[in-house]
Length: 542
Image (cartoon, rainbow, N blue to C red):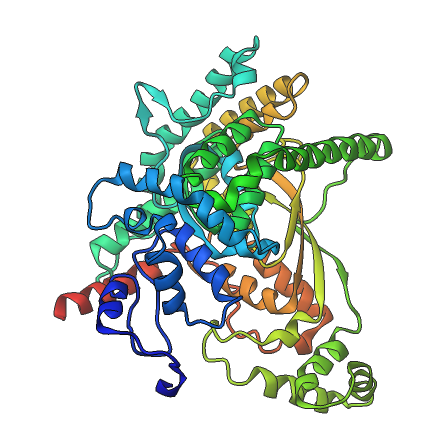
């Protein structure tokens, strides 16, 4: 590797670079202490230069007066305001560096961490709908109670168009009642959960309390409305953020449009060169295009389908699968190891016996000793489409899977709600259902006048319909993860049903899915909490 270094640095140059690189004398090194705009421009130049990255950083950034490099990286100063001004002043310089790179992928070279706090669950789902380039992390309904008040008011979004209408009082009364009921049921339900699953001598008090509280919050999360305020942390690249800002601008919800403006303001301070198009006329045209197409398609859908009554269905329906999946997957397995065309290989695979096909699949998958040992890309050769009807709580969790296609219908109360059987057993279901039914009446009332805004009232217990299209490789990941013991029962049911459907049509392809869990558990989180205890003990010993 050392022979790769074509140019040596002087001692002075090494000292200049030292704060910004992990080493000055090896072929592999990392960047540090550099703003995103500098890293993005630096890598852009890197792709079109025969210089080393260290040399470009020295000659074209550190030593270039117009780059304002010393002020941008702080220069040892603690004046953050001066640093921000320098970044803004140097933006023209970095735009000149970037201007020769028409490929939008250049905007993937800069990234940002962003916190979006006090946003509704409708907004949270809009942020998390980004599949590529953005990684979200949301406040958990399992570990955090959502009944805290601020200035005597529950923390939910007071939707402006509703609050300006004659439904404002009913809106607040309904959501207050949902949160009051949630608060009222926490203590008696926790007592019931602990009585039903007493702590044994092998379980620590910490693990037991955490598991029983998590179970209680899981059972009651159905009372939380989509207006519930939450926090979402995001890490993403500029290209993904730019597209997200455009989508937010196209939203029918005022909250999302305002959120996009706020995000733009903050990203302009972190990665301005990579998100600037979202606020140009080009970005506005794109947003209008998305909004207009959505509205026109919705009207057309109502014209064609508005008179058809929806039918009830099971939680999960397998809508489409490829009957030739096995042949295609095996052909894809063999493809990298030959010079033949895919068509030739496919024709050959059709002549193989069942035993020979199984041998190829098993060899390719190998000995899976962990669910993290996922099959390779050959399993991406076949896809499955599912129509899912499940409670909003399950949707919120499964929606976080991004390497697949998910599209949902409107949040509504028309598909009914789910009552956890534990609430029936604890004799608390009547109070729970009463609050949900009051919320349904309010939703339908507001929906007659403000159909988009009415979605904020819908509690998590109500069902939503959405479609999932995913390849076999993602099936392994989703099913084995979401059927695991610590998962919420509602989404575990969806994962288990997906497994059963695919296993029925493609048993050979599913035979290596060793880590799907089809059991039921009283305290889903207990085993995970016990593992945390073990880790804590090891840390204390060390």
